Length: 103
Image (tube, rainbow, N blue to C red; front, side, top):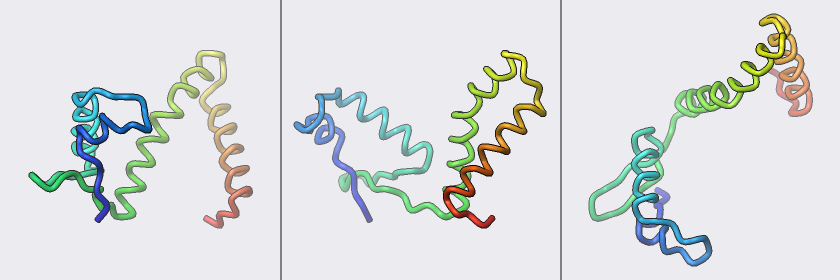
């Protein structure tokens, strides 16, 4: 099971800019709340194993968060919901063709 560096270890990593231990701790806590990592007292932090449906759920939430501002901007610029759907459908089809997805 892959492990992550300790809070202090990551904060003091010489390859990166120095980051506050508190900042690393908050990031780890956030990842733990999301179920992406888990900790074992005295052992450290470990990357959680995710099932396919969990990965898809995370990807769906991420997509919604990332696309939302663009949809809001398109609507505020006068596109109707059906226009937005048509553009999204077109982009989706282009990406499916590029990646050779058969779904």
